[in-house]
Amino acid sequence: MRFFEFEAREIVKRAGIPVTDFGFATSREAAKEAAERIGGSVVIKSQVLTGGRMKAGGVKFADTPEEAAAHAEDILALEIGGHMPRGVLVDPKAEVEQEYYAGVVWDGLRKQPVMLFSDMGGIDIEQVAEEHPDHVGRGHFSTLLPVSDFQAKQVIAQTGVSGSPLNRITPILTRLARLFLEHDLTLAEINPLGRLKDGSFVALDAHMDIENEARGRHAKLLADLGVGPEETRQAREATPFELAGEEVDATDHRGVAGNVTEFDGNLGLVIGAGGGSLTLFDAVRAHGGKPANYCEIGGNPSVAKTCGLAKLVLGKPGVEQIAVMMSIVSNTRVDIVARGVIKACLELGFDPSEKIAIFRIPGAWEEEGFKILEKYGVDYADRSVSLNEAARRAVEKIQGVAA
Amino acid sequence: MRAEATFIAVEVDDAIAADPETARRLTEACPVDIYAQDGDGRLELVESNLDECVLCRLCLDATPSGAVKVIKLYDGGAVLA
Image 1 (spheres, one colour):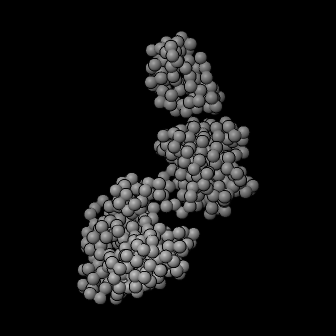
Image 2 (cartoon, helix red, strand yellow):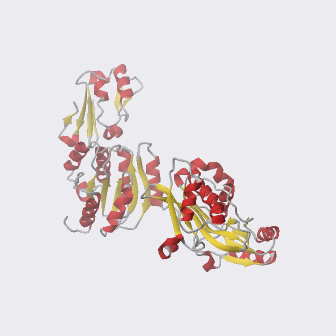
Image 3 (tube, one colour):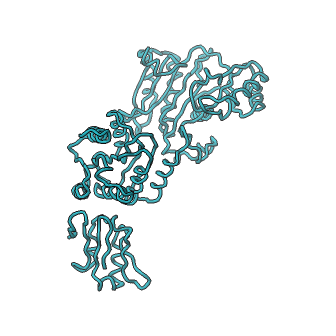
């Protein structure tokens, strides 16, 4: 879940990282009051969960409180990328000598967080990394061991920053890394981190994403920020198909058979196992297939639950066949999943051998599972067939080409 | 008594089914609630749960040999031993 900028700044501030004396306003009057309190020139920034604010007119400068109020009124009514603003951030216009970038992101390949730093802030770090790789420092760190200043210092020093700036930025990056771990974040970014005339540093903008599954662990923080449990901040509302998937998963405590996302293809997917869903979804697309959905099964769902999910997918308009695929399973039983998907076909009046393009789930109780699949003439594959190959076969079959 | 679903059938000796103590043991043993008891304590088979059978054999262990048969309909009627 993404935080608004004003929320991310508050989190940064609580972590002891210097921020500007900003204000948050949801009305013209409140913006004016904030500008009066701050004094001097201010920046009015739209609070939306999308990029391109500046280009869309969602960031404006004001020299007086009256001008700030007028800008706030305009911005509050301005839709950006389909999003209406939550409010406006009223920020003092800082006299910045140089802009830097400080960030922490999750490296999925290394399975570790990584600190990032650049002495070229204010622009996308991806762009800097591509065009000026020598201006980006990086360093992975443990999620188990304490984060130390020396680690941050090494990352910053890679960019050539030294002396007083190095000493002043180091605790900021260290705190950001600790914040990342303590709050179960997937992204913590200060961009730009501004160096002021007096040599001090201040966070001028912040972006943060929290792991959705960790929301329960941070109930107090979310409550403090006014984020209610009903506020999911998904990119779009769940479709009826997706809500039905949630219902299937909720009706039975055994295992997982849900997390459904709707797409508009013709190949229904009943997939899962330790990241297998994403891999399989990508593999199907890579082979030219058109998935009708994404979903996740695992943890040994019951026959009824698997059946419920398969029926949902099979019943989706446009779905011609389903592919039932998982990586090698140990805590999900092959025979139970086989029963579930075959039962779904039978209950909907379909021939399982025609509706199931491929069944590729090797692992626990596969001998029993394969007996079931053989009885119903379902094309199945054992562990000698890779996930990628299984996806290819499923795509070929649905495209009417003999595998 | 006998009940069957798509994949699994269960047969229970009638005398065993009429014994409330054995019925209680079966009801407690089954992890997927295939067995239940009626108001008089007699055994009932819950048809909607038959296909959830995990072939754990706990019902076989809870009763005298041959009193309960779990039949794999997908395997040519093989009886769980």
